[in-house]
Amino acid sequence: MQPTISIARDWDYPRYTFGQRTQQGIIVGMDYYPKDTYLAQEYDEGWRYSVMPNKHTEDLYHFMEYEIKPLSIQESLAEIRAELEQYQRQVVILQQQLLTMPGVS
Image 1 (cartoon, rainbow, N blue to C red):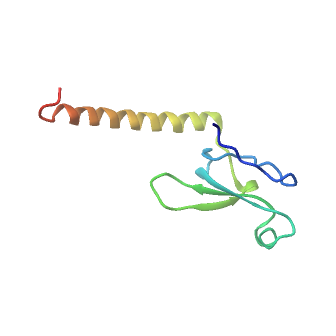
Image 2 (tube, rainbow, N blue to C red):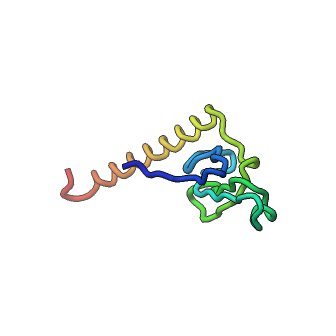
Image 3 (cartoon, rainbow, N blue to C red):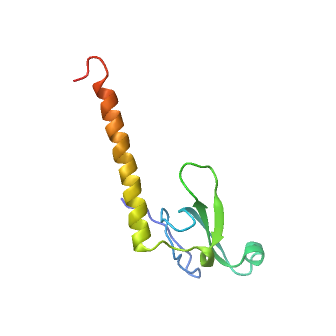
């Protein structure tokens, strides 16, 4: 079963999605500030995104939709490839550790 998110009929649809990589970081949360509310008056109406600049920090920043800058396809590919290479190196190290354990073949 696919997870489903319902959006109120009078709200705009968000431009960005959970887990999307942006120039600011990875989107990990979203809030909507409807017009004629306190939060919309304080911060502007519309979607506000929670972004982690990287996965190795507890820092979390908040941006309105118009402040988010998406990555180009080339930037996204470069980030994903770099992350894959990092995981592949980690797998090699773990395999080497297994081979040095007594009784493991």
